[in-house]
Image 1 (tube, helix red, strand yellow):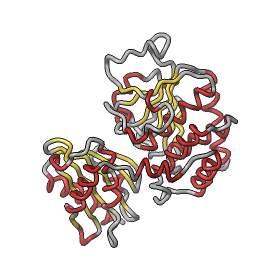
Image 2 (tube, rainbow, N blue to C red):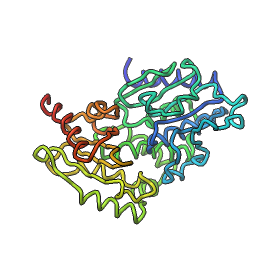
Image 3 (tube, rainbow, N blue to C red):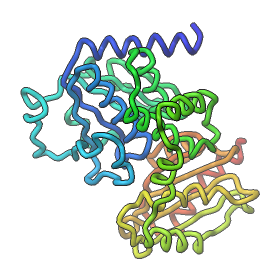
Length: 336
């Protein structure tokens, strides 16, 4: 069975599952990003078109407002123990779940408390497998994004994609390919994007909204990050650091571009974007060009992601954190 047939078979399996169930819980990973939001909303819109009820719930306390142009973004709920689901589900409980862009229970966060039994759960993801927690697990690490996989559900369903659906599908692929510039970008991504443009998607509008609409404070903070730039291991690794006092932005997604800038230096291979989110506790975004599998580095600190983009959290002082990361990176350089 070739890849195209395998995709069609899995899409048919998921559509059969959808046909047999209703009252779906939809969720994505903690600290949701563009692919997480877009794939979740795209599935929600698909289910709505199929006459199914679904509720989107994230562990995140707040949503990232730069994605509020997506239809039904305002319907996304934030998890809490007191969340009353009776208005959304007949008996207050989801009967089935579709989990998007989540490689493990840990990355799902507290929403895992709402999951029905595993045979009623579907996982759709493009990260390397960490947990199998669905009755149906569709994982394709060769896909640029989870949203690109969701597109195949639309194709197999035969539903006519409207502009709202097209915006969601385009957004997820645009985000996770870094505006079609990352090494995970495929010919299929360009093909899907072209179809979405024919439906009416305006690339400049969505690209501008996601990547180029930043607050004054965000640009000031990006400047501080660039000023902090340090080189390590003879220039093979470069790091950007922001202390807690530097983080004056309300929306942390506005400064995520620093992760990509950390690996944009000529001659460098791996970039670290380190931010202190509370005293002596840091959130790390890792990027690489070719030599280092940053997913393996992140996993050493209970994080994860992809070979070229990953993240983790580490306790310690600034130089301690950098030293720990460099130690893991050197292990890979020594085996490359």
